[in-house]
Length: 315
Image (cartoon, rainbow, N blue to C red; front, top):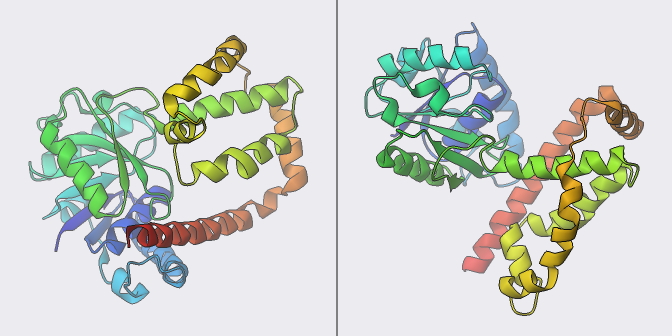
């Protein structure tokens, strides 16, 4: 059976472990922190029944998925026989440079080394590696077992074979890879999310809308379409003649408002007090964890609904 190594078994690593094990892979978790892989496995055991209840284990039982997971005593043990290693270390450049030097020396040359980094360009921690052509970024939206999009990002020296193997593995694991042609700060998803957050903070800071009104605009508006189609398909369907017709009709609106969107608002400035006050009025700080559990269960229900809808369409 195909083996995956999870390097770093914290918040992201344990989520990747579920993703790969659910897809039928053998998964070995390793971490420099004593007891971390075992703690991750205990967490996973608590999540699997909820996934099974929502039919999100590909027909397998929680026990069968759990049996595919193991704790490794070292990185070397986790990497032995692995075709793919998913690294989940903190967002620290010096740490990643040292870690990849270690992994590159241990892993077989054919093993793909993939980073979950959301902010560091792969060229910055791979340039001096002996086998740098087999390293890329596979950046998920957490948790990947509920949100399938994953960015596959090359360094300038990443081989085409590495990119193909990484993207194919992600598809085999049930993910939807965004295969970038070259690296770019922020990749794809954070650049799009950042553009939206910039406008959200600006609208609140300038007194045009409340925090909740902005959230309503996404939650009860744009996100309803975005949960099953992207921005290009959205505009393609929002004008009688398709995307070219949409551009002819509406580009002038966005052209007019675009200069206003060049000005940044400091997220940590006075607007933060407003955002914090309004958010804590709606959700107390000590209720955040409970709400996170609620969010993940709603994501499970949405993922189950989308899978069923996709099957019905394909039938």
